Image (tube, rainbow, N blue to C red):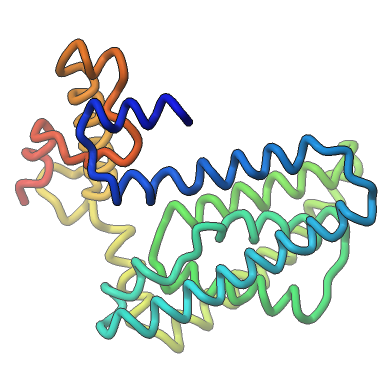
Length: 241
């Protein structure tokens, strides 16, 4: 944390962007100090409840603020409505459903709300994250192969229900379904046959590597938190179409 201050000064990073990026690290450090204390069970329950409602508040605020400030179509809204703790909240809810077997009307409605936001965001990585969390919760709930079979059947029923919700959402929101279809077939529509989103991520990582190895100073201290990363031109031919 202290070293990052020297790093960002040496590299001349934007101070405002640095502070925005360093905030999660400050919060993580605070969480570390809190977790190191020997709390009793009652206080631990209070901390867990506070974290849960904080994630719920983040979900609601991010969605409401994104919808209110975008003012455009789905192409603009989808980038603003996802909370930074989205998958953390889904993981907690899936633990309640699959592992702890505690399901209430509110938590069920809340999870369905996260699925709707996920569909509106048209973000494939979020969908993959949800499926991986679901598989992990199923594995945690099954201490043996016999239990895994039973839990797997229950999980399959939940997946069928989620599939029905997705199908209903596609029927009510055809524009959302169109965006998902476009995202899934992106690679087919390009001359290179490569998915533009994947190429973009690779170009970002390649540029970060190139900048880090661009000088002795960069190799020694890196580009610093909050550095303005760009795209490597090496991947431009894949996006020519």
